[in-house]
Image (cartoon, rainbow, N blue to C red; front, side, top):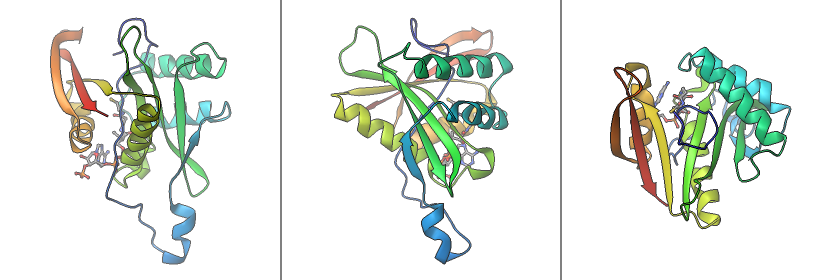
Length: 188
Ligand SMILES: CC(C)(COP(=O)(O)OP(=O)(O)OC[C@H]1O[C@@H](n2cnc3c(N)ncnc32)[C@H](O)[C@@H]1OP(=O)(O)O)[C@@H](O)C(=O)NCCC(=O)NCCS
């Protein structure tokens, strides 16, 4: 689910949200506000585990994710970046993005995932917005996201549309027969 010559990632994306994370106790809202920072190597097993917990990715995709994150932290993909989202002092999500080869100012969101029990609180949109801002700051013009047409990605596709992405094209039977690649894009 990755562009040619890019890490062996699957689908992924991010956006700005008008929602704020909810806290049952208003006095604890400060600790539950999401904090987005560059990832560090200690995050890798946590990010892989939370991606696995979403039950969206296949075992080979999870292996590919671990390899991608390790490669980045080893400096093998110097242009790629990984952001970690913490909530309440706990890693709650992450995003991996990087520039497309050859093109000028075109970026890919390779991976995005939020801990299953934290879905629907705006963390994904916060991560996506941060990716967009960082890409913009590096003269990014266009952010592309690739995902699958399978029913289990329906909420994910809705998430991208809600973030202002448009469905650019569908490559029929790309991943396997009946599993098409859906490409979303957004001008930054
Ligand atoms: C896609 C994902 C990153 C979104 O993160 P999130 O923090 O749940 O998203 P937000 O709360 O910011 O936005 C919620 C919106 O996304 C959509 N959404 C996607 N998955 C959702 C879920 N499991 N629960 C609630 N909303 C979800 C909804 O359409 C919702 O829109 P709404 O506000 O109009 O109801 C997250 O659901 C996830 O990790 N999914 C599994 C992994 C995945 O699919 N990664 C991308 C592969 S291409």
